[in-house]
Amino acid sequence: MFEDGLILKKKFGENNVFDFSLGNPNVEPPAKFYKILRELSLNPPQGIHRYMPNAGYVETRDAIAKQLSKETNILFNSNHITMTCGTGGGLNVIIKTLVNPKDEILIFSPYFVEYLFYIDNHNAKHKIVPTDKNFLPNINALEKAITKKTKMVIINSPNNPSGVVYNENVLSSIGKIIQEKEKLFDTHIYLVSDEPYRKILFDNLRYPQVFPHHIRTIITTSHSKDLALAGERIGYIAINPSIESNKELSNGLTFSNRILGFVNAPALMQNIIPQLQDISVDILDYQNKRDILYNNLTSMGYSIIKPQGAFYIFPKSPIKDDILFAEKLREEKILVVPGSGFGKPGYFRIAYCVDTDMINRSLNGFSNVLKKTN
Ligand SMILES: Cc1ncc(COP(=O)(O)O)c(C=O)c1O
Image (tube, rainbow, N blue to C red; front, side, top):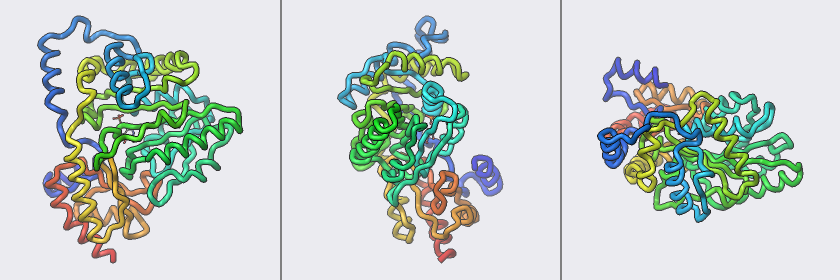
């Protein structure tokens, strides 16, 4: 999609192509990020460019633990935190640490497509569980899908590609089913929450925390989206402090962080983010973009579940073949990703982390294609 976008832009001009294909934030990091960066470059602490403890600097992990304790009312300390190269790095570290070859990892469709490759990296097996018409996990299907070999259930809320947020009831149902199955099979099943969009929430929604719903919960997140630092590869893993053998688990995560090839999360970023834990980019700007797209597309006749977070919207394709529909949008120079790419044919994803002006100028195109298909 990325290459295709470049070709189209070269041919028709940057402003005449409406590229909604990538989840790459169009905004800049907050001003405070640059202030700290400037201060660090003028007065670099001695040793800032050297190797560090593999889990990350203690001061950085302390700052994250403090913020997480505030947000969750659960007491975290630096031992529960491992700094990672983004959430992608975090997920690979978690899977490497916990999973044996042929163990099963459950994911819900629509899913972030890289899960399939992360799971394959560690010779595990993915199993896809459907969601309901609101893109919330189908709990009956989850119950049927868990077997003796299930080691992990990965959830992602706010969700890419649907923008849906899992509420407390959903999280509680997932936790209950997992615990029932653990008893039945005498196994341990980890609930892994992939949360890079946890701060991008709309309509004053508070983030429904996953930790209270299952003791074996591990979360991983990053500052790729909330601070618009996607290229800087800074994120972390946090384990539930009450998890059994938490020292052994932390050691495993630290060791996997070291041996997967990235060694540490970037030192410079680890020096900057402690002071940025309670801020984010302008979330209302994303909410405004969500509103423009949701209101306009639904009044044209598109069918959409209203996103509550992240920066994606996932309308139903007006024709059965979502790949063909994406091609028709492309004729209007609108680039989207067909739902098939997320294991959910019949839908398409619009990534609206783009300029508001571009969103407004694209609306005619969406309307034209819908009229042509009716
Ligand atoms: C659902 C989801 N998980 C993980 C990632 C990886 O993010 P990062 O490694 O930049 O934190 C992304 C990136 O788009 C994502 O959408």
